[in-house]
Image: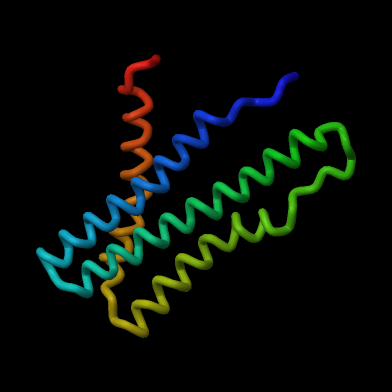
Length: 136
C-alpha cells in the first residue's frame, strides 16, 4: 500500500486554523464595538483557545496516524505519551483557562464560549470552500 497523500488535508487544516483566528478577531472587534472591551476580549480569548485546541488535536492525531502506519505490523507500536496528553489535556486547558480568566479578570464566560465557536464556524467555512471551489 502506498502512503496517503495528505497535502489536500493539510491545506484544509491550515485554512481552518487561519479562519479560526481571523473570524475570532472580527467577532472580537464587533463585540468590542457593540458591547464592551471585556466582552470583545472574552471572544478573542475563546477564539485563541479554540485555535490552540485544534492545534493540539491536530498534533495528537498526526502522531497517532504516524505510529499506526509506521509500525502497523510491530508489536511495539505505541501511541506517544505526548499525544495522549494533548488529546486529554486540551479540555483541561480550556476549562482551566476559562475559569481562571473569569475569576481573575471578570471576563464574561458567555463571551469566551462564543469565541470558542469560532472553530466550528471556521470548519464550516473551510468545508464549504472545499465543496464549492472549482476543481482544476
